[in-house]
Amino acid sequence: MPLKVLEATVSSFDGVFEKFRSEAAKNKANLILFLADKDPATSLSWCPDCVRAEPVICKKLEASSDDIALLRAYVGDRQTWRNPKHPWRVEPRFMLTGVPTLIHWDNDTVKGRLEDYEAHLENKIETLVEK
Image (cartoon, rainbow, N blue to C red):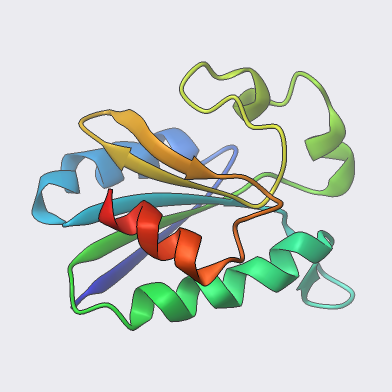
């Protein structure tokens, strides 16, 4: 099974992240994708960049024959995300400034990242996975 997907919210992140970390050595690449929540009225993310990037990222990762773990971490609704004290904005490991953000996690640290303005670019996704 090349792509293994875990999902977390702000409130469930710590437990899911521990599982993600404990299984990291089994994978060629471990990625965290920070995304905006989906709007219940439309079933789409409230963030247009997330709507654009998520399918490109998933398609690229699903096409790989390598074992890859992807943790989808949902930042919350727009109001929650806009709070400058959002936990993932101030968390020293992540220091998020925008969504989507795709992080390559290796040896308990950020090995590389794609910010919101570049997370949809296939060549950059490929380069990040290969780091």
